[in-house]
Image (tube, rainbow, N blue to C red; front, side, top):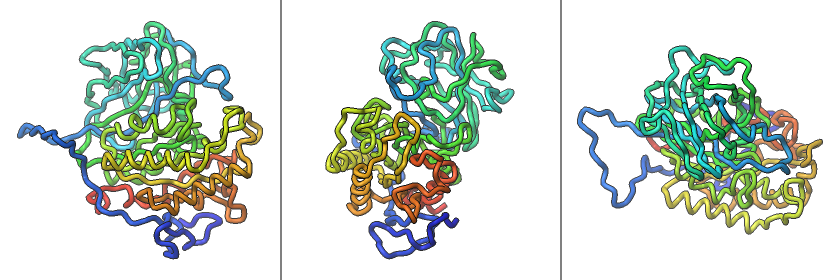
Length: 447
């Protein structure tokens, strides 16, 4: 595909300067062999029974938990403070399918136990509907109800529900007594439905209230062939999908998942709108959540990092009016920590350059998000990402998305309209520009 405003042959690798490539792929360093699995030292593998077919649990979808911001949050949270005698139905598009599923719920930021009286999962239909005959009960240790302690996640029992890659599933939760909505994911980009009473088994939730946030639903895992693997993308609102069409699965990790599904590779979107490398509030900082959102996800073999623009641009805005901008050295030190921790677990880690943002967020409480000195820091960070050689490979999204006639701005064809976030077309271009061989184990890369 030829990208608008960018002649073919312009992209070059940071390590192979001068080598032209097609504009449909970013020029990136070649990948060496990647281990097909990780062995824990000192742990002997238990043999499977002779009649059993080998399978493994794999992360197929995630929404990184974050604490609910207080009353000074600049935008609506769109969630109630309490849920009582209500059913919440949330839809998620998984990346890889499998024979069985299990669901991860989170009370990570709760101050008291989260009591769920009933839960079900089904294939999702249109809107709040579920596909007839696909509805299954979720249990936890064989029980229909569960009390999740403050700060903890819980994993459901496996449920027999064969689903295909890129299928949508609906998870319904019933809260009989008051449940505080302390743990959520603000920018879900998917409509969720909240109805009165216990309606977890209902074919549809007519008359339900809606929200674009996610509550308590942290991950969906599938039982897959052991050769299947996952790529995690840790990022901010550009990865989380702010600017993408609601209910359309058009974030750039969604498009990447479509490309990787035939190769048995899942994509886990660990983006949080407003996330930072070093700062908290819109989720905890990347160093604090890297274990939970990347290293602890089953089946992850590669990680992409697209973070840092909020560290640069938040200080001085409504979100952080008194904060000082971090130095390039502090941001680079944070990247180095992520690299070291990924390599310690045998993961390949790719760094993505920070994308243009001149004129960002006009007419919002953050309309001073862009300043020339902030952009100078972005350029310095991008130069390090491209030239340091410390990441295993580089995704140069800055050069991909920038306007050739005005490189500090997004190309209009890729701009969602707020001059910060790519729209659907920009997200597709990002996903299509990734050289898949950089993410795949050797066997999957050669399929």
